[in-house]
Image 1 (tube, rainbow, N blue to C red):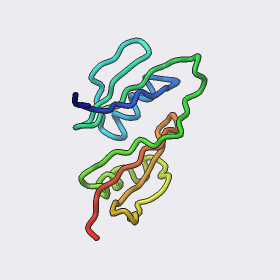
Image 2: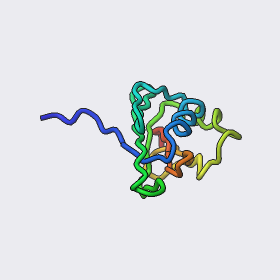
Image 3: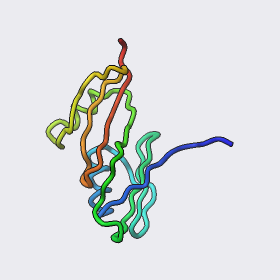
Amino acid sequence: MVFKALTPMLHTASIDTTRSWYESMLGFRCVAQEAGWCRLVRDNVAIMFMENDHLGPPHATATQYIYVDDVMALFDTLAGRCAVAWGPEKMPYGMLEFAIKDPNGYLLSFGQPVAE
């Protein structure tokens, strides 16, 4: 038995707002959408969103951590376009990271290994 992938399914108040933000801000593309649900993909990263009013406002205590091959290039493309939660910062465990929040308030952290 092999685990193949992990794709977060996150709650959103608006599929359209969330989809538009991920497409325009981070370059994701929508590969599937139905009423109240969509799947967004960029390279080898996928994220799904659903609307479920009974859950209340979107919230999460988890960070969505995305490994990238050039964290500073990504940071430079986002500079001035969205608020940075923290970073870029070289972490003691050998990663260069920064984080932003999406329109739902979810923390997205981007990291790249750096040489010691």
